[in-house]
Image 1 (tube, helix red, strand yellow):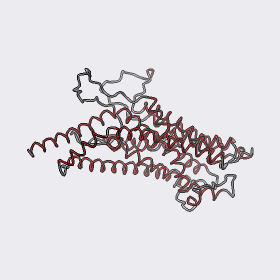
Image 2 (cartoon, helix red, strand yellow):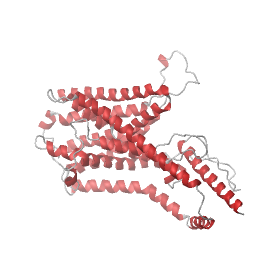
Image 3 (tube, helix red, strand yellow):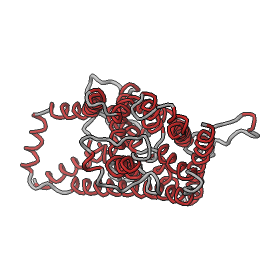
Image 4 (cartoon, one colour):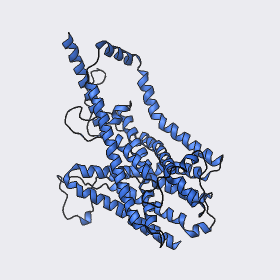
Length: 443
């Protein structure tokens, strides 16, 4: 009799592992649903369809606003307000005075004039979060080799879970980090003035930003793997008593609406929170007349557009771009796919170009001579374009994820990872220098 109960437990554990394994396969789009329906009404076996585009765009927009808000307030908390208060006497920029000011003016970690650039903490946080929610590398061929953190935590149907994860990875993690602002600060250090050019400091800033991002991504992925291992071990641990297991099963069967309520709350919470934040930013502009919140609500409207453009550009990643006039022979069908993440490269390059151009305009003397101070709408719109659109278009988390995956994939890809880093950092740096330097001198 006891032997029969142990067999039932083993069957339950194997079924649960198979369930998570199928979920992971479906989320990645690499396979089909292998569950057989025993109902006579379902004659054909069908797989969950891909996530609808409307749901994906909806989650991208909501998480983009949340990522932007997290990045902006991290910048303020860890050094942005200190820089404003120290430069307010010598420039027309006015310090922010709100609920965060008493704390933010005492915590001065980063600076816009050093290698510890303002967006470094946000870039590290976003890279860490992407490491948590990224698909873990498969380490064995058995059914329970790897259970991703989101797949095991989100009580959502497969198609909704896929759209929700796109929102987390691309919308939240990608927007918390920004390559354009990082590059603009390093370009500003290199251009500077004749007596204050910090070329070495800018190079150290590029190295520090890359090391901080890649290290944070690895830490996040390690934490997720450790958590998944503990959860897998708990699944295979025998139950304390058969009675407790039966009571737990009866409770789950008796409350089928609990899972539905949890799934609905999970899907709705990011949208509600982003709308509440947008309303608060509008209130801070209209009620208290704080220019910072005017830029923030404008940037919150522009950030989803930049995130959407980056998401569409990601379709060019690892895809071979052919040029018929330059092709001497047809490509071999056995040739591996292209390794270069072209979409991420174009997103970071475009965002860096926009950010450098706006930074040059805002810092030019001719712009300031026209009485465009921090309270003007022109300044607010330009700052919102750089903060929202360019910040959402560019990303550090996906960039460092691709660097890590290229370096860990095969030994032959280590040189390609280095080439990708040099191409992205060098290309964005050169574009920033050309645009920023020419506009500053021209204006």
